[in-house]
Length: 442
Image 1: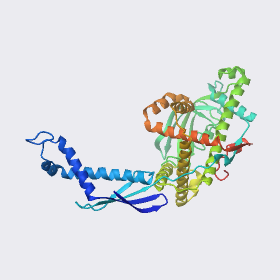
Image 2: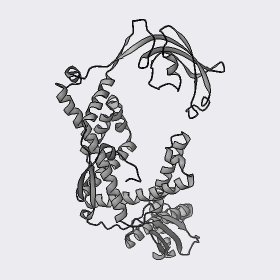
Image 3: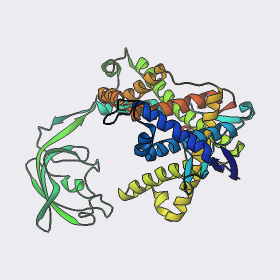
Image 4: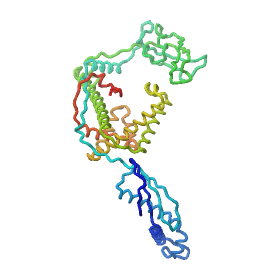
């Protein structure tokens, strides 16, 4: 086998490999003898068929198999000899094949970049922290009480007011024709909640139970159902019942209903949970700052094919969001060509940082244990306690999801490893600043 380097630019490599005709003929002959040992034909037992007959029948397949083996072995020898680490399986382009002549083919590939890690302790980061304000604790307690609220039927003869719950039947129509989704029965509508289209709830104020109200309201231009957007509808609405909202008092009895001894204990628990949320936000910002620092500190080429795959995934997400009218205001305000350029830059950054973290994890011999995976799945389940069993079943049956989670866990462990070595200084900030994740501000 002879190797000739054709190109070495950036991460691209291209070689010409020549296999001599003699070596190929020897390989074909060896393959034919292997076939002959187990081949049987009419009048001949296995292994006793004359070689000339075996050659005549199996020459073509033996040549194909020998060529496949020799090309594969040659590529492996090339990678070993040149100490190459290809990003993907190398591409092989065969030259013209002529029996009795040397075989030539071209091998092209992208190789992984050489990354030399620097001393992470030279990186200086600021970790923003926030104290839990008393008003946040009070706000959380009110939210908890709101979640425990109930409604009671109004027995007195009075009209509806903002804040009441009107139990209604309604039938919606446009130009006298009912439309899908425009009908409801015994629907509990909190007046003033703005859960119905603008102008609807206000027209139910000052009405009594049993009244039928012809409500006229216009669907917003941005309404998700395009056939209804911007159109005026008539809703024939029957107020069946008026109910008042009753919220529990925030006191020791309420604390006991939440599983705590008294209000002081409940406040401690609430403060601890809010502090944990603050810590998560703080770590998220610290991780972003670390990735920004690493991005600036390291310069190396990234494999184009990996960037293309990442870019395609980002564009696919963008197109899905665009199709479902879920783009944010910033995305809507930009030209698509400018957005796509930004996405390309993001793809390059993600691949670059992914390779860098993989290198750091490899050198630190970081592994994801089964205990790590169990904790990660448990954390997912705790985020959605009502669906915990479904989440466990999902990961139990879905290998792809497990691998995605494993990748996330691995990255977090590597980031924690790097953060343990950088110089970090804490800075007290307001809650608003802690949760300001504006890219430009960052």
